[in-house]
Image (cartoon, rainbow, N blue to C red; front, side):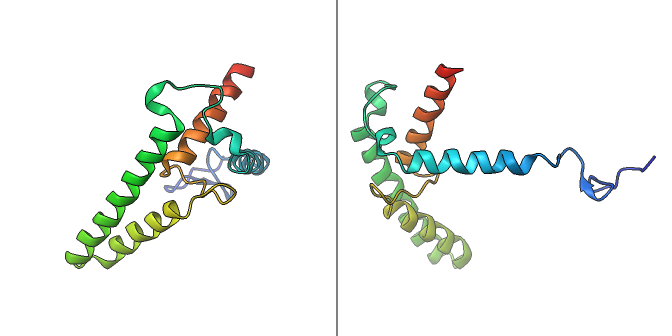
Length: 127
């Protein structure tokens, strides 16, 4: 019997990861694309999350997050942490560019995160 390697590798494969996970990953990528390419998830249709999670409130929150990220990037630049500043700026730019038909798909994006949550709720109702 092979002893497990201290890094969790056993017999050339990582312990706990089966060969069938690639198809699962493909299904997740297809589901991800299906959500970001369907603008119906971004509106106020069913399922409803109440008054605090409307599309308008989410758009406001989206704008606030972008502003926070740009301020954090500026603060990191002043602290001479350019790597962190670049990361904040890159994420803020990605979120700023999120528009209908050109969704970013990031869970840091309030609009995309809400769309994914709505899709998960509908999926759970089907099961």
